[in-house]
Figure 1: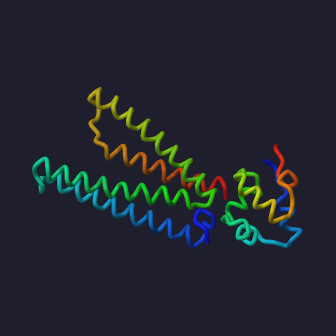
Figure 2: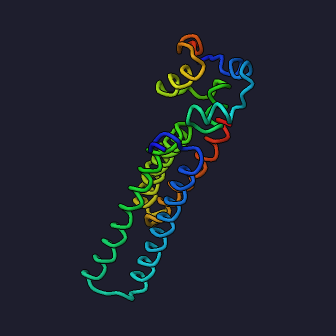
Figure 3: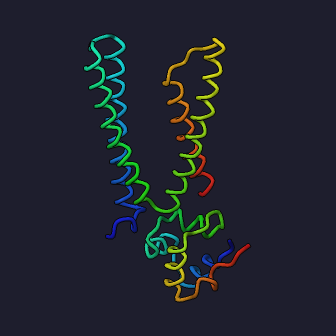
Length: 63
Length: 135
């Protein structure tokens, strides 16, 4: 699954650790999601979308 | 913090420490019971059964700590460990049936130790490989 997390995070000048803390997961998880190595669970995808005040489909899209 | 949510730091470490403690305790008691039974230090069906039950009861504690660890774990960590469990279980089946054939053919007569070692080794390697894959 592709995503725009890295771009959105950069716009906010947030580190992976900061986003991880807000999303209540490890930094490794954010890194793996960002790089497309790991597809987040639906609850995590919702949390990330809520953090950026966006809809899930504005952040994630299928390959 | 709510359980099962914030997992990457302090809670994760506590869960890991708990499971390591349980693992060391269970393995220690298992090895002790195995040694004592093998040397014949305890005799009689009742004594041996009591030792086996004690090891099993501690094993239940170990299983519970592991289930708790998985439930509380960060979702990536959970995936890595579940994948590793699948590899460990598969290694157990493959090694077990392989040993069974070798045993039936009289080539080698291996006890459960080799099987357990294969499962643990496969699990450990799969955890390391899993973390590398996602990092």
